[in-house]
Image 1 (cartoon, rainbow, N blue to C red):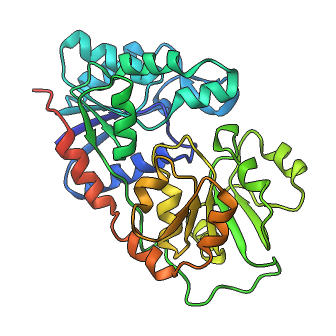
Image 2: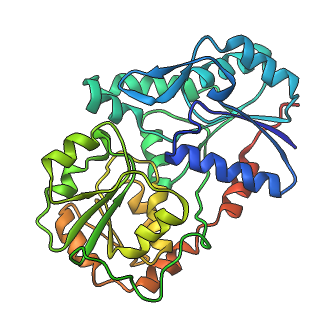
Amino acid sequence: MKIAIVSDAWLPQTNGVVRTLMALNRELTLLGHRVSMVTPEHFTTIPCPTYHEIRLAIVPGFEIERHLTGDEPDAIHIATEGPLGLAARRFCRRRKIPFTTSFHTKFPDYIESRIGIPPRFTWELLRRFHAPAASTMVATDSVRQELESYGFTQLSRWTRGVDLHQFQPLAVKPATDWPRPIFLYVGRVAVEKNLPAFLDLDLPGTKLIVGDGPIRASLAQRYPNARFVGRREGDELAAFYALSDVFVFPSQTDTFGLVLLEALACGLPVAAFPVAGPLDVIETSGAGKLDWDLGRAALGALEIDPERCRERARAFTWAASARQFLDNLHMVR
């Protein structure tokens, strides 16, 4: 098939949406499909207010139409609700072309934490955006139930995966000058990630933050005893997972959390709040501790066998994720 995927999120961003779409593109190509990624790199863009690393396309309607008619795709998937997603949605509705969407980001929570707009208004806008889709793909059953409570319909499951070759445990944890145990966070350093819930904890050893974002400098100044090492990728990122003892995930707004799978694949137990994402990844596997007392969860996770974590990660593959995505698509004709 020829599949067009429209996304406002793309490189050089390195968030979960981008990494998911890159893995999906790779797996679909391996299966013999031709994927056309319609992303901001093809358009004139401006930086997103308050988040300059995100680029927003300016008046993309004509170019969207050129991409989606010129490639003659068999299926169109709209991954995000930004300017490109809106333009693609308008194009499909005008031409009466079926399309699918996916729900990656809890924007109502993000927007409330940044500018104070009550979530109910943003939820209604998102519901209207996704309503015409033949199917809206969600990563977990918890998110599906939440969206249904807000009136979303036509929901289907699209799970995530992890590269078990790149992310794997070491036979012996490397020596380090940092006091153990090492409690690790990986991800954006932004207000919606709720990092103070982790950094305020009274824990032994070292708190390690891998990632970058708009509040990194202020948090590094506020928490001088924590280690902020910036963004890391590939083998270097995998090495930080393997170095650590517990992965702490303080976010309460993620719809999945790819970093959870990466940590588990490296034999790293998870400590998190019992919310969507961690609940669905950990389930009854015993590979993590979920508790509204995050400190208790972090200390309890130290007792978990790393092999149990690795075994849980094996349940998530990108190949299975791609096949599920294909099953959810609707043909243009």
